[in-house]
Image (cartoon, rainbow, N blue to C red; front, side):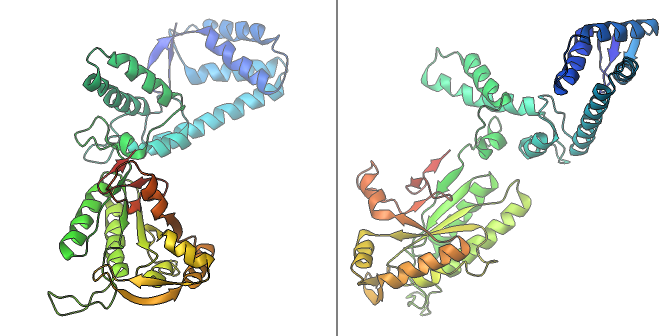
Length: 383
């Protein structure tokens, strides 16, 4: 005898699966499973009496329900019916999502995973969750050959696949998006440098766009940009300041995320001694502003000492290296605290301590990744 599954596949009849389903129904009701074997035999007998070469799975489940009811196990039958209804709804949702749930994750997990699946030109998924994980595990494992020609790539492939399929570990989004594809970009976060000239500002903007298109996030220090109102020698005009250029980056991220697979994420950092620091601290007080940015103040030891001593700090133009004005360290810190309480931003980065502790002498770290936990040098990335 054969069984027709819901996906129209024809498989061999296996009465152990019927027994397992009935056992689960009894166990769910905390009822002794002693009668299960007898009920299973009765169900199997009815199936054979119908004399069909191929029987549909739904008909088998109907027979199970009827047998439970006739045996007096009405509560178990109701649970079994609810179980069927729940799975029927799950199948309906999966059909709407348009993904084959070959790992039996359920509709919620598959809905989340759908954005990572490879798509055709019509935007329809062309791989299953299992194929997604196999694509990723194969790409990650293949790197072993680069470092050890005798490495058993299949062993690493199977190990990594098993970890993902069992949900013991999942890599970052860019790895799920890009591993095993022509792009192959698996890093989640980058830091990009911005110098005080238009070429650098918009080169980094272009690089940001390409990183975010591939699913990565970007961190920047705007501390090298001259403050608002400073003279611009080439045009005879005045600078608009770092916050104005942050708006350009924020808008570009908005545009990119509309056509991408997930929203972009940025980190903007400004030193505590930049002349525009107070405007920066409060730039997210408008809840609609800079929605694609986390912001943090790069705090120095000199600032913390001035805060302790209730003293002032000098605000230094990064362009001229000259003091523009003095301001109370307490006023700056109070503004940080007030805005962090009211909006969640800014954070604080202890920039001197970071540069004391990182291992590359002579290299200056100015920014972190978007979440703030990973300081990075310019053009470095983290996974």
